[in-house]
Length: 272
Image (cartoon, rainbow, N blue to C red; front, top):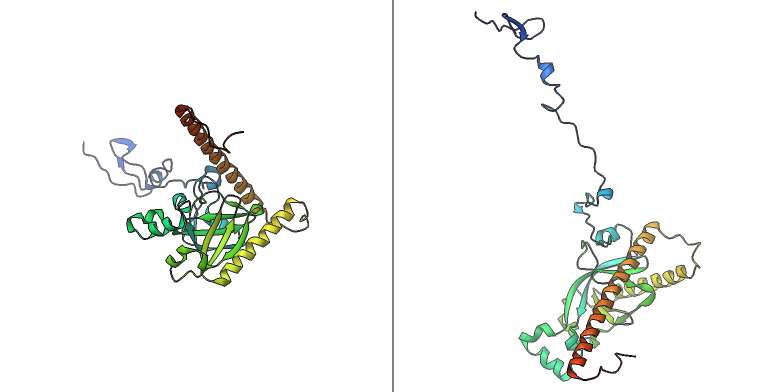
């Protein structure tokens, strides 16, 4: 028999007159099937601190954190004592041991320029008890080991005493030195005033770090955020020292093997 699929005016449901079963469910039924046909339930928010994912962007910049947890943006968000862009003097080890006349000869030959001192961009951040070095203001991890302020000396150097100062651009007119037991690090800044600010900031932060270690600054508030960053800084310093120790031990073993193979003795100062 013919099937009349005229909708029921009272309910809006189509019926087959030969069967009491509706041909299709009403619109309200279709829209409520497990909530999956027309509407998805929103996903719960993700806690980025618990998952280790990168924190959300702020001010148009994505906050990324490297292995150390000491990204440049993290430190800049912590109100550091001083920060800014500088140029670092990089002197190859071979160049530093050459006699002065050989240094001048190497500097005069273009294809040996890789052996000559050069300047590299760095971003310094003085925060808490450490001075951190970064490639840029958005780097996820520091370059090398941070400077423990208690063991450094800051000063100002004259550009007349640095041969490579002539290679600096017009934006850098003064030099700041940061000296450790191992090495003197030279940084170029914009002008003499900025050099004084860096030296005074490092000296003041150093004195405050020593005072805290001696227990004489309990009455002086110290940001909780800086305490956390100091702990990460000390951990990074220890990690770099362990790596340096393993490298020196490896070099020592290679020298011993070479000495035994040739029947010679170790250079004075390398043993007992």
